Image (tube, rainbow, N blue to C red; front, top):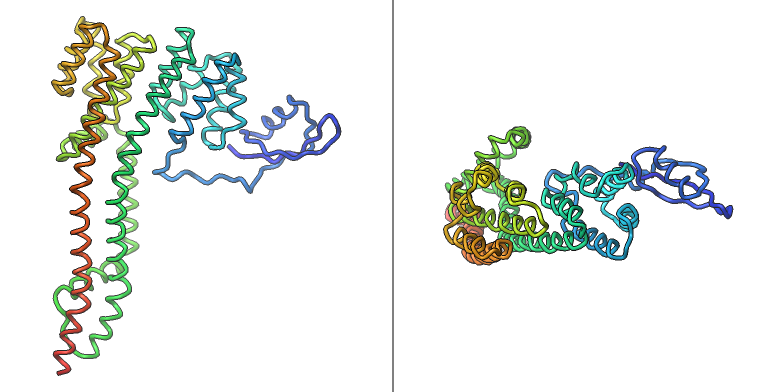
Amino acid sequence: MPYFLCRLASEEGSIVSQTFLASSFEECRKHFEEEGFCVLSIKKDWKRLKFPVLPFEKKIKDRDFIMINQELVALIKAGYPILKCIQIILKRVKNIHLKELLMKVENEIRGGKSLSEAFAPYEKNFSTVYIASLMAGERSGNLASTINRYIDYAKVVSQTKTKIRSALTYPTLLILFAFILLMILLNFILPRFTVFYADFDAELPVITRGLLAFSQFLRANFLFLIAFVFLLYLVYSMLKRNENTLVIRDRIKLKIPYAGSIMAESGVSLFSRTLGLILEAGISLVSAVGIANHAVPNYFIIQKGRQLPELIKNGKSLSESLSRIDFFPPLSLDMIRIGEASANLEGMLSEVADYYDEKIQARIDIFISLLEPIVIVFMGLIVAAMLLSVYLPIFNIIRVVR
C-alpha cells in the first residue's frame, strides 16, 4: 500500500500538502473530500517508498501491537465507539504494515462487521488467541477488560521470547566473529603468504596446505555454493507449505538433546497460559482447547492435540484428555487435576505456565553458561590454527635458509 502526496485547499482558502497511506488514488481523494478539503492534486510519494520485508523480519512487532491495544482499551473506557477508536489509533501508528492492517479493519467495521470479525482475516499477523479474546469480550459486553487480559498474556509471551533471544546473542556473536576471522585468513592472508613461501622452495606444513586447499575451493566454487544455498532455501520454503513436512521437522526438534526438552516445556507453558486466558474470557472448554492448541509453536504437538476437543466432548476431563495425547508432564497433569477439583482451573493453568516458564529460564541459563566456554574454546582452536598455518612455514623457511 503506497503513500500519496496530496495538495489540498482548505475551506479558509489556504493550500496545504499532506501524505496519506491508501490503496488507490480514489480512496485517497475520497478520504480528504470527506474531511472537507478540495483536492488539487494527488501523486505517489516516492520518497516514502517501502522496501520488501526480509524473510526473517517480522512485519508487526509485539511491542507495537501491545501498544495499540493499550490505546484501544483507554479509548473504549473513555466511551468512544469502536470505529472512532480505530481512526484515532491510525493517526499515531508509525509501523506501515500495522497501519495497513488497521486501515483494512476500519473499512470492515464501516461495512458493519464487529471488531473480532474485522480482525479475523488477519490472524496470521498476530495470533488466533487475540481473535478469541475479542470475540469473548464482545459476547460478555466487557471488551476492555478482556483486551486487558490479552495484553498481560502478550507481555509475558513477548518477555519470554526476548529473554531467549538476549541469552543467545553473546554466543552467536562469538561464533560470527570466529567465522569472519577464518574467512579473512583464508581469502587474504594465506594466499599472499603462499607466493612468498614459493620463492624459498620450502614445503608448506600440512595444516597450511589444508587451509589453502579449502580457501581455493571456496573461491573457485563461490557462485556454485551461493546458488546451492539459494536452492536449498527455495526447497525448504516449498516444503514449509506442506503440513506433514512441518510435523516431521518439529518432531525432530523435540528429540534434540537438552534443547528438545526446552521446546517441549515451552509448548506446555504456552498452551496452559493461552487456555487459562481464553477460559477467563468466557469461552467454553471445548472451543478453548482447540484455540490454545494452535497457539503452540510446534506442529507435531498441534497434530497430537487435535483430538482434545473430541475427547472432552465424549465426557473426559481436561486432565484425562491431556494424559491421552501423551505430551504433558505428570506434574502439570496433577496441577490441572487439582484445578478441576477445586473449580479453579484458570488459576491453576496460570500456575502451570509460571512454573514451566521459570524452569525454562533456569535451563536456558545453564545452557548458556555451558555454551559460552565451548564457544571460547572453539574460537581458541581457530585462532591457534591460524597462527600455526602462518608461523610454521616461517620456521621452515628459517631452517631452509640456514
